[in-house]
Image 1 (cartoon, rainbow, N blue to C red):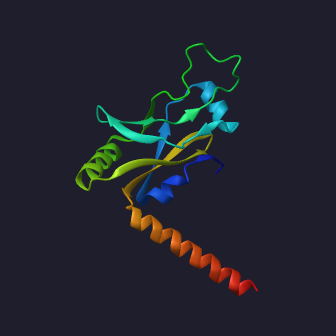
Image 2 (cartoon, rainbow, N blue to C red):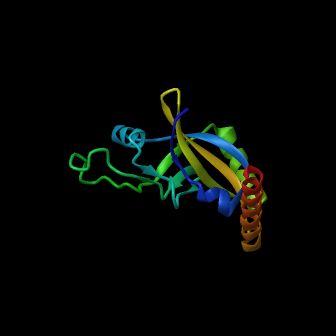
Image 3 (cartoon, rainbow, N blue to C red):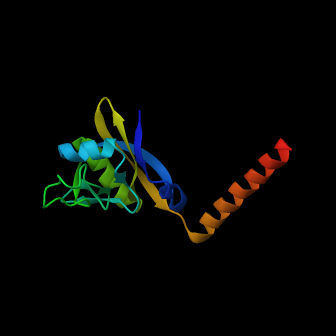
Amino acid sequence: MQIYAENRRVYHDYQILETLEAGLVLSGQEVKAIKSGKASLVGAYVKLLHDKPVLLGAKIAPYQSKNAPPDYDSERIRALLMHRREIQRLIGKAQERRLTIVPIKLYNKKDRIKLEIGLAKSRRKYEKREKIREREEKRKMERALKT
């Protein structure tokens, strides 16, 4: 499994409660661009439009900028492919517990591009500071043990 893009900021801003795997509807040149490392999930999010999950805000630069179609939009809305039961469960949990659906990483699985999405609960400011403080203390302890 090769990871093409990852949204590390998600782990800082949210507490991931559950992860799911979804396929993406992509064009041929977008697949090539992702495999060459021209994708970014920074600032991307998943939204439910007409009871179907879509990926918004993900940037996929054109594979060859000079050969890109004139109407190519690098931040277009991309549909997510999931089973109907998974979508219904996702909608239910997101509305019931007031959770956010966030994209975590793009990777390949059996020559298919997959997106890992997570049901996440937003962290409050004090929780973020607490996590940073714990991480710094852990680093200090590791440094002390090395010397």
